[in-house]
Image 1 (cartoon, one colour):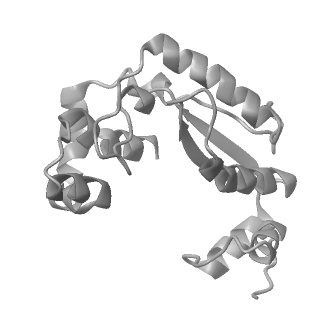
Image 2: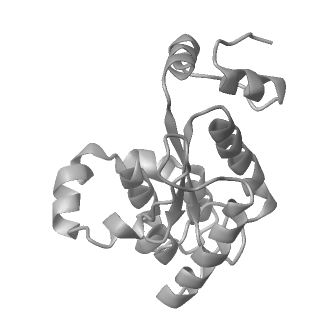
Length: 184
């Protein structure tokens, strides 16, 4: 086990969260000297998150406990499209009201783990609907589409499996990864 200067990375290492790190030294130096913000996105496709989200929530929890700023990105915009990952068929499209109701319930889940506010290490919960719903489609394609490879998108497991099984993959679902990348 590597000893880190960063309390956050030490805790993650001790708890078995770390498998690989890109630029381990650089990340450790940064996190030991500065307050870092990090985000994880959560779509509001149900009234609660599934147990698979617990690892990500615990990462945000430990980030905050060690003086850093967690960003729990709510996917109000991406929830309108639906993540095709791990699905054999298209998701049922949710109404805007369903998404709002789900977001309110999910926020309650986060309140049990994170402190939200305006302080240096307080968590924030922006909603990607704030920027995704304002996108101009043609401008988006011109500005970002030229940097994206359809070949790489088709090679993604979530897409490749649906195509290999000859299962329907809508253009809407295919675009999910573009919206997800735009969040970053």
